[in-house]
Image 1 (tube, rainbow, N blue to C red):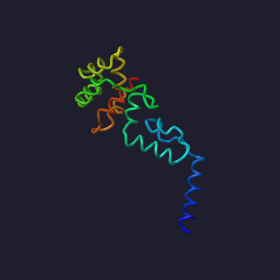
Image 2 (cartoon, rainbow, N blue to C red; image 1 turned 90 degrees about the vertical axis):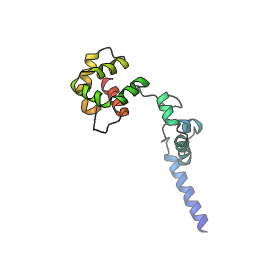
Image 3 (tube, helix red, strand yellow; image 1 turned 30 degrees about the horizontal axis):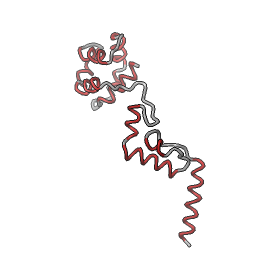
Length: 148
């Protein structure tokens, strides 16, 4: 008897939440394979598919699987490597608005107005370098947002 009552309650809860469900798991293979996500169970399956296959990150960076690639996404491997290898020197140059590393970064990013680029970065130094443990990915994303 308890199983019947518990089963009935579970069915009511799931059918009630289905009416309010929306695709909450973003983009990725889970959204492509499980297109009709009108229930919590299907949304969970979509999220699980995205999480276990690791495809949502790829979808975001490549603009595939129903994901939109960020407009300010830096995909240049030379830029990523340069920033990662020169975080401290770049911080010094950005803080002063001049220097070899900021010039190199401007060249790698194919910036036309280098003087304006340097000024924007210098004026937003605290946004780019938020603390002493900042990583290269944050610095690149912040530079892209500031220099946009």
